[in-house]
Image 1: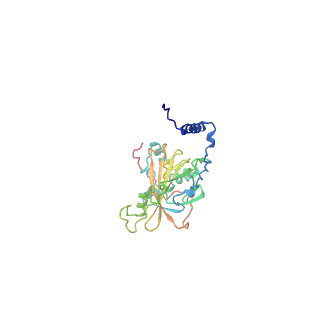
Image 2 (image 1 turned 90 degrees about the vertical axis):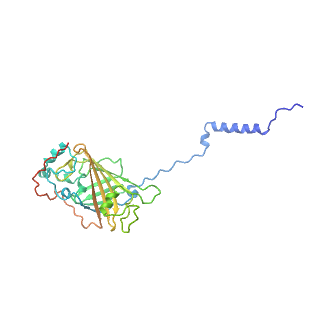
Length: 311
């Protein structure tokens, strides 16, 4: 008996089904038959006020614990210690005439964004709206608006307080608690008198850990002004960058540590960086707006300090 090839009756039907499936996959217009996810709803943009990792609002009093000779009084002409001035700035500063400033209506040049937080002032922080922070200082009666919209363009001519853009920084990682460290924690702890260190045994009565989150403010569009009350110039090209952090002290008080960095290629050979401290007050009872008037002047103001080199 001659045996023919062995066949399986199901194989032709299986091949036909596979062929039909492949044809359906390649057929034009079949993609529309596949269920597609609908358009995703846009993610709601949270306002700067709601997104704030920490509350900076309130009344803050400057605590001058160092450099009082440049902050509590008007320094003598030529005392530019610590300022990386170039020779052009030195020449302008030595020609400073406060009476001429008053006659020209420029008596607020020493109260601009570059210098205001180094003066013995009170700063009030509040929200003008959900995306605009408002900073007021009683010394010189100054105000600066901080916009959290980076696309916000300057309005009007340059001013002493300039155009400021804010940004929340040092945010806690998603899914983590408030155990992060904010920028400037170490100087803040020093200002508050904290003795303990993280992981150092948790000494009773030590300062609580710094809160996560901080605020960065970049201010441009400035009007020419002074870095110090004695005529150290700041040009309209300067950029003032500030970092703000809050740290609680062991006694329950709150301290605001503010680091200021000034970049001015016109008059400075390098960055001018300082750190200032403010202590929170319970209310506004000591708020006392004053005009732009020079701080008391040291004895011997008429004596100029000889120039000590410089670029």
